[in-house]
Amino acid sequence: MPEYRTVSRKGRDEVIINKSRFIGEACPCRTEEEALAFLNEARTRYRDARHHCYAYLIGANQGIMRYSDDGEPGGTAGLPILETLQQRGVTNACVVVTRYFGGILLGTGGLTRAYRQGCKVALDASEVVTMIPSLTFLCEVAYPLWDRLNHALRSLPVRVEGTQFASAVEASLTVRLQDAERVKEEITKLCQGRCEMLDLEEKEMPWPEEVSGQEP
Image (tube, rainbow, N blue to C red; front, side, top):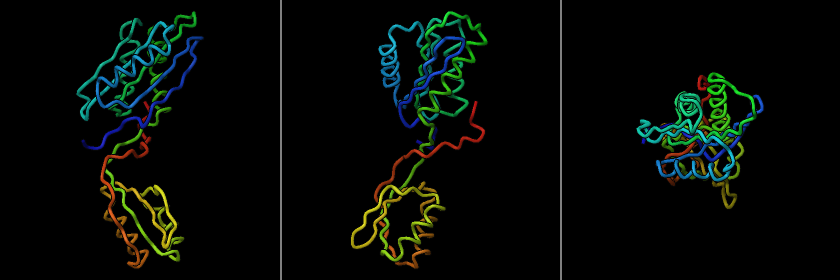
């Protein structure tokens, strides 16, 4: 699957609007069955609530797309949740916004804004990330070189997953696959060739969302 945006974990947050409580929850889902199971969890957790509105998108091309107003006026709940997911470019995710009515009618425009906000706080709580083909590799250097390398890693597009200090320093590093060759060349140059590198694993891994221009 090509790189895509999704949420990294289950997350929950809420907003109060004119005394109505909107609880937004998001969850990564790779199948429609996982999305429906998450929806049922929310319905069970807040079984006394009147509305559990939701939307989910599944697949690289968002081929599976479902949403529901769950009793709210048509187009005021499920669709705004779906549109917020689309505006953030998020797929393989389900968002449920549960509403506890506070006694004040919000009108169709108010409901639309409220459910959009409920989705937004859910996504923020779940952390939107980009899943990118990545490489994790082991880099071994002698102790005299470690401080220099450790400092340089802060300016390279690389994540330090862990370090082990034995007869030499072993660092587990993750890079985007597209950056792997350049990063390895930089490390080799910095260490003047006095380093050993061993590829460990290639797989899709989450990287923080580029938030510029992504807010709905």
